[in-house]
Structures are given as structure tokens and as C-alpha cells.
Amino acid sequence: MSVWSGCSSVIRILHISDLHFGPPYVPRVGEEVLRLAPTVDADAIVISGDFTQRAKEEQFIAARDFVERLPDLPRLVVPGNHDVPLYRIRERLFEPHDLYRRYISPELNSVLRIDGATLVGLDSTAPLRAITNGRIDSEDLAFCLRALQEAPSGDARIVVAHHHFAPAPDYEGDRAMPKAKRAIELFTRLEVDLILGGHLHRAYVGNSLDVYPGIDRSHGITIVQSGTTTSRRGRAREHEKNSFNVIEITPRMMHIFHHMYFDDIETFAPIARYSFPRVKERFLRRDALRDERPSLPVAEVSA
View (spheres, rainbow, N blue to C red):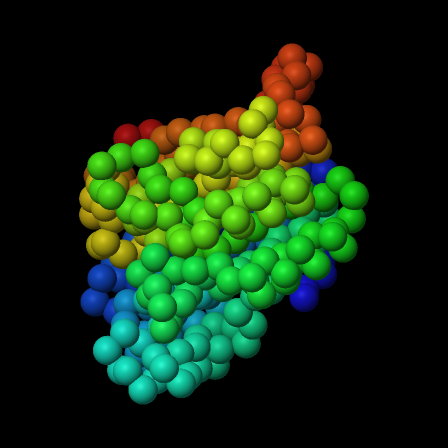
């Protein structure tokens, strides 16, 4: 577990995902992410899996070098299914996370605490059973339960996993993780504010109630998926596109800024902003809408 202090009342998180170091990686886009990252003025960085394309050592080394060039901030990472060997069967069976542990993080499940927020990273890879769609086991849920039961009162509660708990609202046909509803029920009881993920290769901001009515039908959990930040593997409306999210959290509100890379201006620019009440707020108060005007974490770019 990592604990950091010094955060202000506004928490800002840079959320990137699906770097896919290897043949799909786009160097010029990666360099632009590294250039922009310090300008976000983030309090923490989340990388939600798929650091590599085929879990090869040279790909992990390149991914590690990229991560080390990001701002020196509190960081939470989780593995993705591409960080597990697919065709090297012996490795997948007996040491599926060996290279990930060596070059990215020794922990598969982890907790990051900063002032005002507790983030729980869960390993959704399932090398033996569900390598594509992933799986959150009962042991992962027990880890999350312990971490959030110990979270300070008033903390923003954030769960990060590579695989998605709810499919994107398009026609790509992605299935959510097996037993995802069981996990969402626990997250709802624990008053989780946000679920962050990747894997879909296109951005998606929605709510757990979109797919599962659950036990809190007046609120649900806000779900924020990042597209692929640095690879050519974008899908659906983000086909061959790159994106990331910047998340701002205040005591009452959560604001998500979705950024996309544009070839003609050779940089990322914000294309959408979403605002939601924190779980304990339950609805948008007029004074919050008036007083809490979200800032734009990355400077506006004129085409």
C-alpha cells in the first residue's frame, strides 16, 4: 500500500490505459503524452493495464522506461490481459505475471491513498480461465473490502481494473467480466464513487445502472473507461484513435474530461466533459453547479 499526502481539496487524476508497447505502439503519440502529462497538474496517475502487446521482455522494458518518464507522482497500475503471455503456454500456466512484476510492479492488487482519495487496483487478468474477458475473484473482492473499510471517512473511493464491468453502449458486442454484477454489488455497498478501466480501446463514461439495477437504484456507480492512449488499436468510434481521461474530484462533485489525439494539430485536446455528484451527494445541488466550476486540466488548443 502507498500513502501520499499534500493533496488539495480538488483531486486531479490522469487516467491512461492500453499503451500496447510493441508493434501497435505509436511513438509520436507516446511522446506527446509525456509532454502533456506535467501540464495536467495531477495528484496521481492511473494506468489501467495492457502495458505491452505480447508480454515480451523488450516490450516491458520499453513500457517501464515510458512510465519512468511520467511525472514523479503517486501512481496506481494494474495488469491487463496483454501483459500475460498468450502463446508461451508454459509461462502463462506457471509464471504469467513474472515479467510484469519484474518491470512494472511487484503487486497485482494494490492500494494507493492520497489526501482525500483511496484507490484500489484489482488484477482482473485470468490467465487460465478467461484471458480475454478477465475475472474478479472472491479473493480480489476481499482485498477491496479490507482496503475500503479502512479508508478515511469522506475519501473518494475509486476502483481500478483493466477489464470492464459493463459493456460500452455500442455494437461491438463486448461482454462484461463473468460475475461482474457480484463485484458491482460489493462496490455499491462500499460506496465506491468511480470505477476506472481500459480494455475496450474506446472511451466510455456511464453508470453501473445502465446494465444492472443493483441495490442502489437512485445512484449507481460512475464508470470511466479510457481508450487506448498510445496504440493503433482504437476501436468503434475511436478506431485508430488515441485518448485519455483527466478526472477532477471535489468534496461534492466529479468531473471527467475526455481527451483525444488529433493528427492535424498533433496533440490531444478535450472533446467532452461529464459531471456527476459524489455518491454521498446522490444528486446535483444547485449551489454545487454554480460554485464548483471545473477547470480545464489541459490548455485549450485552437485548430
